[in-house]
Image 1 (cartoon, protein in one colour):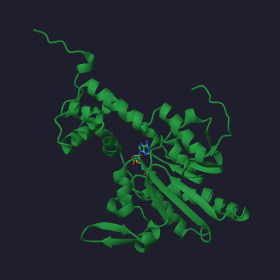
Image 2 (image 1 turned 180 degrees about the horizontal axis):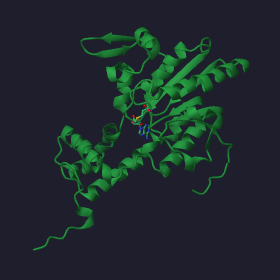
Image 3 (image 1 turned 120 degrees about the horizontal axis):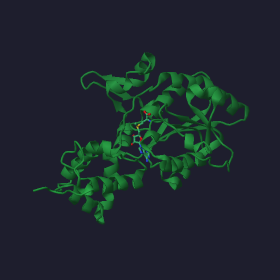
Image 4 (image 1 turned 45 degrees about the vertical axis):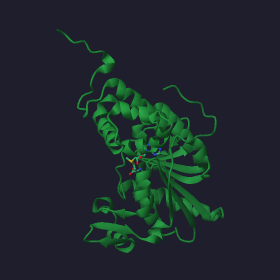
Length: 302
Ligand SMILES: C[S@@+](CC[C@H](N)C(=O)[O-])C[C@H]1O[C@@H](n2cnc3c(N)ncnc32)[C@H](O)[C@@H]1O
């Protein structure tokens, strides 16, 4: 006897407990709608394991039970937990040092000089997918140690869609792995090591420079409510988005970047199809610095 199994009922490879294609598709579509993150089938094993953790945490039976819960009235509160579960939060202090060194010399120093000549006292910085805060605290440490940064008011904001990582960032207690690239003098001065717990606690002097909060990059209204920024750092997050999501996110960043502001991307973050919004600053390409295009620049055919 041959059993026929429809395409939608196929079990996806390496998923435990087994996840059917139709179950995967509806979960992947919901995550896409909520966060812009597009899961491909080759990551089904990851999604299955993360969803199963939520199934167990909620005392539910299986994926279908979880799907029904998500679609119930009380299930709305689960959306945040779902995002906390499925986002990938890899980060560490002083990630990509050569880029950060160039950021100081090629972007920050000239920006301080210009701010002074324009009689501007406050500069604003946003790390828009900052995970546990390492990226925006790194910038705070750079500002604390840079010649020329003193005497100006630096407002730093770090945001992420994942509430768990934002909470970790607020505590600012890090494992040795996260701080391994911090220059020794800064580590000594701004972190208290707990040798027994093997952690490094960031000092209040640095913590108080930074405002950390939960924020979805698709939420244009909330993003606009933060006001304008001189520098936006958006590293290692666009890799999770398709072009449609990148269109939305890049428009949201465009709206809150000052006209002479700078967008900093990561090396794997590609915005070729959003070049009507931002263009690479070729003279400062080592920083992956992008400038705003004039408003109304037409979107080019892909
Ligand atoms: C790989 S981490 C990058 C952290 C940091 N920027 C770095 O380069 O070290 C990507 C972060 O993007 C966040 N993220 C994913 N989708 C998001 C969204 N729609 N809105 C805001 N943050 C998002 C994730 O929660 C995760 O913490």
